[in-house]
Length: 440
Image: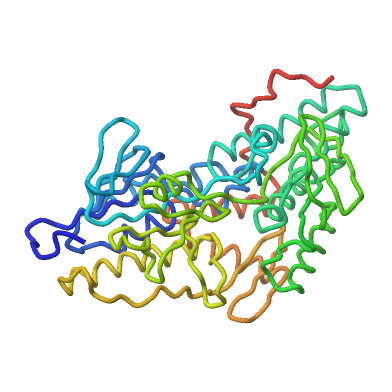
């Protein structure tokens, strides 16, 4: 870290990414003798855990996103830039921007997140959208709602059945939550909206290659979640692997058994891949990335041989106490962002670049997933909860994690209204690629 000895010039900290890790790193540097520049391609912080509710019409995008400039407006040592970083010049200690200019740094915190992983089948991306951005969510919402609209128009029972079949690939929290929300959308919110079809006849299929849904949870909670899905008439197909996706079919395999599902709406929640910036950084440092595109970091979250570069969140392969890489979830990114900021503060206070920092230690306060109305599972402090109590815990935790007080009020009101009415007020079809493609 440079500029430590000369406090007349603040240490320049550049943070790439305004997600959970990057934003909490910036906020944790409040009042520190540094000049922070936060760079993100979007001008807002997005609360990704609730994206599935945008995709299924429960919430609007503005409910779960807050402008970064607004969030950080009172922090005078932070500058926010909307830009895209394309490469690194480590010798000159600069990040290169798509616009052609560059930005110098003394300390770099890379928290650019992750995108979808199709496990070598990138051709599926256009047929099975994932759920990482607002654009993803609004496109999925349009695809789902348009499937019902097109089913209403067709007289062909085969085409109608295909349009009313929705396949979710991936049995983790996102896939489970998405499948449950789709079922509630079709069975309640849309129930009286159509004249020629019965929306509640929609078929929701959840596919996962593992032996149970929510494999990261205790077996009893996985079983509870599977039971909740069954109550919602979601067909859970564990142990099945997707082998092919076309515009009208999904082929799955279980051992030697193969099955084809006729559908035009496939939603991908099966895997993530670190931001392409990880590869750029690997090339610049001579390091390599793992199968998930992540960079291995030291116990203090630095790149080996580069103590001025922190990598956190979904881009970092950081071993936990069990020796396995920590999961790519919001609490990990938040704690890593806070740790990186604390390490910078300690170095500045010690006025020595080589000051020793304690290794990062993740404190796992628990995990939770909601399956539907009044149905969730949660593991907190060794205690397991399922059903209504877990659902209330899930509501409270997610509500309090929204960074904007205004968003908390809006989401609380919308959730209360949805609970009372079973409604989904944000059922808008925008930017739909199927809009001009009637069913045959």
